[in-house]
Image (tube, helix red, strand yellow):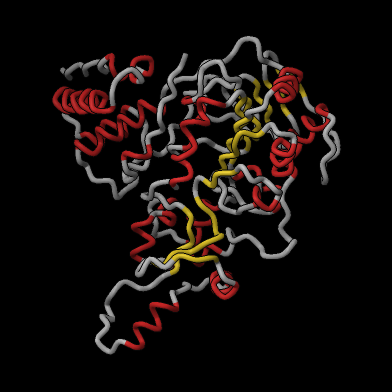
Length: 413
């Protein structure tokens, strides 16, 4: 007869986890894993994968102390944000934008697909291409893992030419980028937090932008730490699928006959955030104040699967309206958006701009849409949910990230 597994401690519920200190929540998580190990005869990694549905990166060790920290992060992610009953329609969204002066925009790859930049998780996206090109990688995310990059940067640079923004006008911002710029021009934008690395927000004219995952504007030498702008020579090297190296280190090595030839290669790494690296100081320097100050959240074109940015919707004050603009539903297990505008981002924001009577360049023609009460709209490009009861797949949690990646919790009133 098998042992009955113990129930999760009450402290691990989403309702109470936010009231505990980080140390208390960690202690509860460690105790939870120890109790389950004894009752089920399973190790900590198996408990997280089988009972919580996590897909842990293969290089994460089966270390109970480390995995207790992963469980802490899971509990933070699983805090549920409840829908506001009075916000349901497109008219409500327009009214909110008109009356808001501190709009927080959280955006992802869905903003850039209209201009030919592939996203990561969709069919035909970056991750599918990685699986086809590098079948020896257990997980396509490993191509963006800092430890894998240090071992061998060549696969990343072979793929980087698909991510590298053009230098000329061939790559223009999308209608969605221009919509965010219009929010700023009208004095409504508090901040745009983008997970994209293409830099199109800045090209559209957005100044109040935080590049959460960095971008290709600058590079850093992994050997000497030299930091500078992405030069045309380095850009062309990357476009050729080659590994760019630091000329300063090369010169020093050539002048030094005693230089250690086995020393780490002086690779110029683009300043994008890899898995296993902390986000930029700009992110952590702004996010706490912005979580408290915002009066409206617009989520545009993101799967909300990468922490800590994915935690933003559950970290905002409960009374702040939240609007989803995306091809499909996301984060259903932890966020109830007030209005769900499903479809291609450019089509949806063009409809909002028309209703707001904003004139923007490159507006898409008006498109038909359907309303599904109480708060969902389907525009062209929408992927309707196949099963409303279907449980959302939990995001991959990167256990190599330092503790500083936890979002500060706002002091809810």
